[in-house]
Length: 298
Image (cartoon, one colour):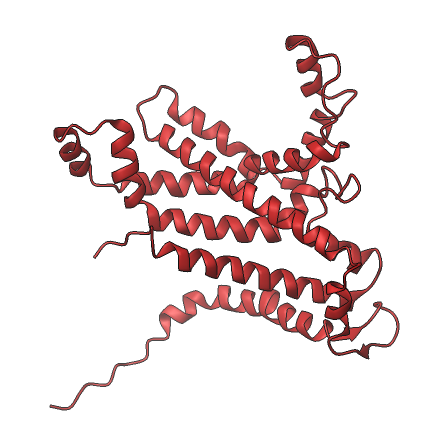
């Protein structure tokens, strides 16, 4: 019998076309242009000169500030991903338990997720102000500490502060909703069987719940890692501006400074390519390591 040729259905692609066109116009083409600019020297007004890999050489040289920014970026990414994953999973677990005022609790927690990150950043900056901030006022009033920390101007506290701030950004609220949906899909008969075998709540959570939602956990970890690398600018710049003394200057902020303060578009594009490669490597490592702990349904 002759095999029937499958008819090409264009309808699904028509529904996808707005996203495809938007991706090509606002992501694909800028990425290609960035690759091209990374091989040039251009100050946005003069003549563009081809310099090959010299921009990358200047980035990786020993005296460059790139290595300091890279260390800050990796620390910020690692701790912000762990913190946001833990907090969003905890909140999703609470929302899926029997508690009063569940809808109101979910609304107020997700409220920060829909507010602009820049606006939240300026609000956090005001709250943590060493002189007029309400946080230090509470510390002095309730904890009786006369010299509370300078959260935004102290090198030891500034990076910790911006990492904690990531809990209140939009990514955590989105991950909470994704986790909440995944928790609802865990078969209840597994919990009943485990209860009959004498498993307590913690055992049921670690041996049933977490393996069941492990694919969603991997998805949120990858998304959180990429958002932390690329979206750090919007949460750090309004709060600390990269200071004090570069303690919170991540790579995305250094790219901004190179492009729009120093007008070195070639250097900025090279730094953006390096950040892209770092995000790619981190995502690939997560996928490779996931083979040991992610459980997919057969």
